[in-house]
Length: 206
Image (cartoon, rainbow, N blue to C red; front, side, top):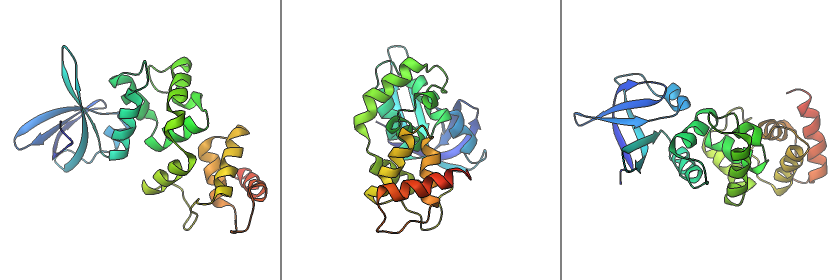
């Protein structure tokens, strides 16, 4: 119904934003992470929105990126995850973090969100597992300006993605696995095993 709103920030708290658009103040529920990343009061911002209709209320939930909005919608499709719980997940995890947590079965990372226990986290992983691929996760992370990425260290090849999968299977955090593969000096002709050995050496310095 409302794809996005562009206006002036009138008020921000850790849970809500009042955005003034054409002299009308829209109350938009936001994540704590979103609140910390917003510009200062009085500045203009564009917020992508999700319009939630209940029997007793109509609510707007907002995000500065379309990727976060799309992830929010996916989280809402998980049985047992409501609008506030989904927002809680995106308060502690970015959309990129959620994708990698799901792909690496990292229920502990998801369970850090307020109101999300291990049982719900595992259910979320099970229901979203077929929604992502590792290749897509890398592409999205690069599109979003992956923090800590080394210049030119773009993970593209199947061997690199397989090396990351192997590291996460060994118990390393997905973010550490990704960083280690990016930092390794890799040539195009290297196979997965060689890349894995180089990445394991890098993990000693993380």
